[in-house]
Length: 225
Image (tube, rainbow, N blue to C red):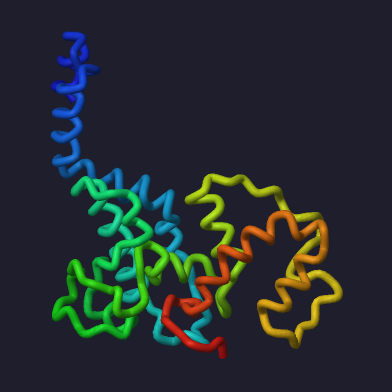
């Protein structure tokens, strides 16, 4: 805007004091919402919530209202770091999130008494940071089951900035020799014995398995039905 152009013309925009002052001013402007909606939406993949469609037969409770609640939670959570100068480590550890009554029910928490999202402690529901949010857990699932691979891959690529090699040609699902009746962890271990799969799956699987307490739409569970 004109204020920035004027300071740049004076040659003082890049001084520490002026730069900090202008960043503070810009973040206070309503236009800064584009930062958490666009950058946050791309980084956390929350934009994809608009099109994700879990199995209606298996998850009839997933509807547009729940989808919107998930997306708003992620946006407000990201915005709290942008606007409140929070320690970025809390993006993984925070026990506080932004939920409304619909998400409170989904998380098996007491109602917040509002259709609007409120800053609320979600630690009692076993949720911390972005990894406990139903939006992330839904986006990183298949339509009818969870995905250790998708969730682990998200952590590697979006948080650890690790570029993974594409899978070998014609590889889809488990390789031959994997017992389909074995528990998931054992099947994944059998899969990793294939040298062409082990390189990436060693990391992806180890990072993805901790999320198995959450089902394909982000509900907490003790067993995988």
